[in-house]
Amino acid sequence: MAVDELNLARDCLDDLLIGRGGAPIGRVDGIVLELQEGQPPRVTAIEVGAVAQARRFGSHVARLTQWACARWGKLRPNPWRIAWSEVAFDGNDCHVDVDPASAPTRVWERWVVEDLLGGKREDA
Image 1 (cartoon, rainbow, N blue to C red):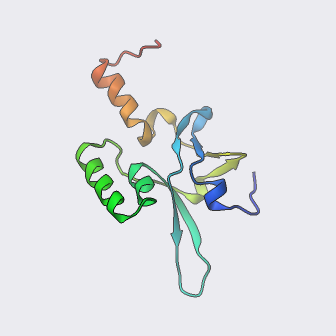
Image 2: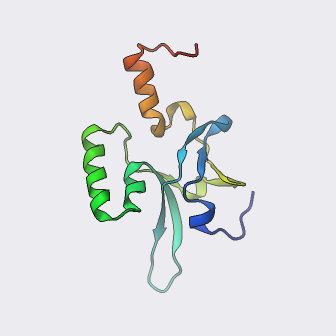
């Protein structure tokens, strides 16, 4: 779907991020802009992860979240960046060509299944 006009805060930020097969893999937590003198800002990527989300609440919250994620978090890298050219829009969702099973955002889910449940899924 071609997008002629997009309000980034309204139409992209916090939207559900959908991977291959329609499986959710997170939400859009941040937007990366490239600034060049004499040029309008250019969107280069979206970000997913607690650190990107925390930046929206100020530098103190962002630093604390970054420290906590480095110490206890499993998402690497945090935030995870996806090139803007890889993002497609469909109504209220952002679609990316990513395998949900290997998406970095599902690392906690994989950890629970593999480490806590011994590789056995409850729904299997």
